[in-house]
Amino acid sequence: MVDEDSPYRDAYRLQRVADGNATTIAIFYSAKEALAIIPSLDESYRLMRGDKQIWPNEASSPRHERKAQ
Image (cartoon, rainbow, N blue to C red; front, side, top):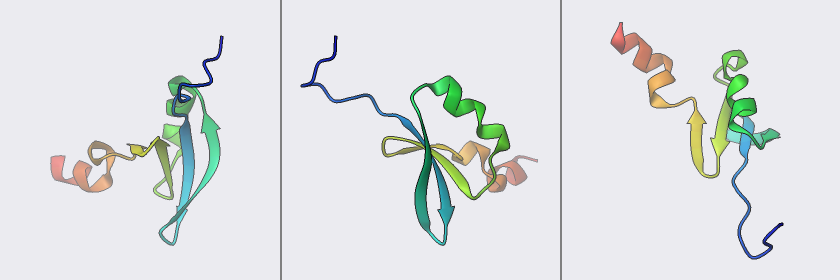
């Protein structure tokens, strides 16, 4: 049963970032699907859920990796 008064759950959005602008190119409705694509992404993409950036995050950024080594 769908409750039309409740907000829908946030989907994961794959966005391509170019020149400071983000364009949504895919939408995923499960975390498993969304997170499965991360190994194939480079710095020109980001994965969002609602207003929160899921990937890359500070822990996965190249700057953070260089500091840890």
